[in-house]
Image 1: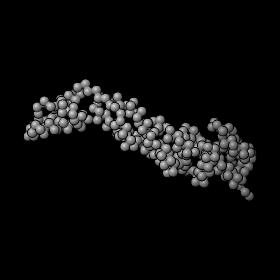
Image 2: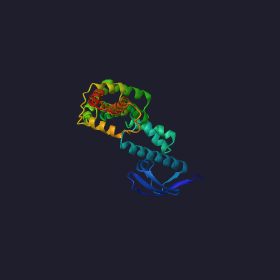
Image 3: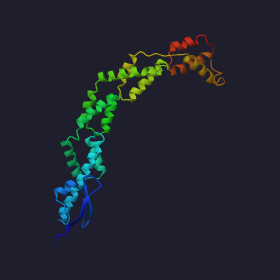
Image 4: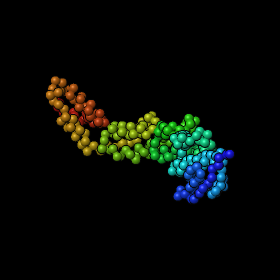
Length: 266
């Protein structure tokens, strides 16, 4: 005799779209779609094979609903969804089926995602190398990466950099011009812009240094910090060069340093 699974009771679950179903072999949470599809009613009986199929399809539907919830917060790439399903230990056969269905419904579109990412990164004033890194992290294929990094043209890079540099340069006007340029160079290279383009744009922008006696103050600090015993055996010329080197490292212009210390005795 073929063993049967009997439906002993069913009632709406607190979880929207599901029913709590009690059977002769245990309790299950079954989606409303599956209830309707298989006409699951109280007292109805199914063979073990039939009920196994019901539970398998029900589990697939739960996974699909979880995926829909996962992508409801933000756009996801095919690779991200695959990774999510693998983490949930979903069988490979259903992962393939699920991804195909999501593509058909328009929930997975890596090309559209790439367009969004390019636009978003440009709005955030990040460069093409940053875009390339993010696309790799999202698991997008090499073809798409090359295509969209290429779309981030040098002209667009230059335009974004020019606007960003002009908006930031005055924030560090209390620093020597060389130091201002150095800080901006480091920032924009970190942000994924091309070193050559950053260098060219920065050197075509005008910078202002509001000295307010800062060079004199830094000179005084350096002189006060020098250990006279340590340098007592070196010549005044060598000591002078050490002071000049320290000021150059702070970003001051050599001509300004020479002018300041021309009458100074070391």
